[in-house]
Length: 364
Length: 246
Image (cartoon, rainbow over all chains, first blue to last red; front, side, top):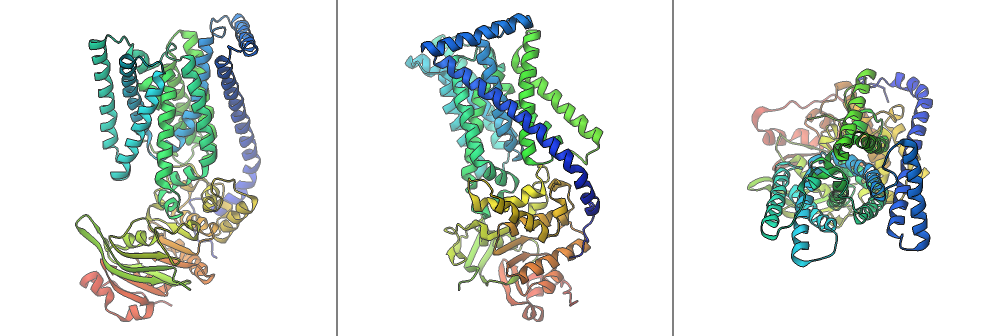
């Protein structure tokens, strides 16, 4: 076969380059592997904390939980903070750390399916879910969690979004935009009505922008269960989701259940959004699905690398955002998103400096 | 032995607008079928129906002897879509990752084995882009990218390769090399269905031609097509030149 390609990548220099790149690639992979492993250990520790919190009625567990908070008090002593000795702060941190793993994980597929708007829509649907939950609880006196109602409504919203997109031309975003505004409108109406006629006191701002007081022990527990489930599902369906994201028609021809996996992805998004809403709030939650992925896609060389970097950047945003929020006594949601955007801008700058041929992600 | 593709009396309409009317054709194992017709003649629709991406309004479709909606050996078909050039254009996927997708239908939810990875590497060698394996697919030229998609089909050990205008936007020299590759794959026993707007390529390469404009104007071997009036009938009187440079 004659080598007669036009030289977008010069084959000969690519051969020489690949030998030079070999060591660099290994180092790069190693660094990412270490990073992801650290995030994994951190996330696992947070799941353990949430489990201790849950089971602390049992004396042995209660003791371990106490020790954890005592260690936190020492940490506070050395850092001069008043954070780590409080169980509610740890619940926040644990929830945020888990968000930092699962939101970019699901977001990587969403962004590259050009479904970023769906995350935002599902957040608004979840808001309607919170409103419905508040009314439901006020009317029935049900003792369950508001988030469970939000989760159910958001998951139903996800199925509706999926139904809409399958029946309109290729992810046409008009029905999605209508749904985004519509569910938010319903949410605000229900909350105002509940306030007026039933005297339900609710601080909408907490749900809109996220708040430390929103994360309850139950909410953190739900986040832990959601996070473990989502990671497990993505681990099992990584290949199928990748193929469908990359080339949907070819995946269909290869007899993949494309519509089934699409539904799975959208429902997972709904689940992640409801979990993340506690810390980030309805308005900001989509940012965590999108921004770390956008940053990773700027510099990643492969899809696997995009996933790893998205999670690393997501985690860095969460931890950096928390540190800033605690230091400056400002809301955590906004801080996390601002840090995420800073990381994104750094990634763009790095791409420009290194003169890579154009961004991976067209921003349109 | 049954045909690879067997289409009987297929009709399909987008709303009120008929795209295909009463089309019947068969593709036998080892055929190289060129599917031609003017823009909007229903070529892509027919290919999609063949592959089960659309269901026909009327008529029946069989793939490898099974009704298409019951067919589940996805790995037997390699598909290079028209959008292949634009899709994946924004996604950071390496050539190797793309080619390994050809093994996904084989392993289901399991991990790729070393054998699967080796088959993918061999497919890269076959289409002569092994040196580009770690490049992002959106950094390749059009011709190189289409080779990657072909490699994916080879990696899936497909018996049928369906291509929808694979060389749009590819320069002439790379196109020749690309079609040589298709020839050698066809020689090795892979059945090929190719949609191509360049009729010269089809008459040069394909051993069968289906000429379509909503209805089928010709279906048979290439020589009888060249001698027939099917081309001018399907395309109207504009008359496109048929190449003969064997």
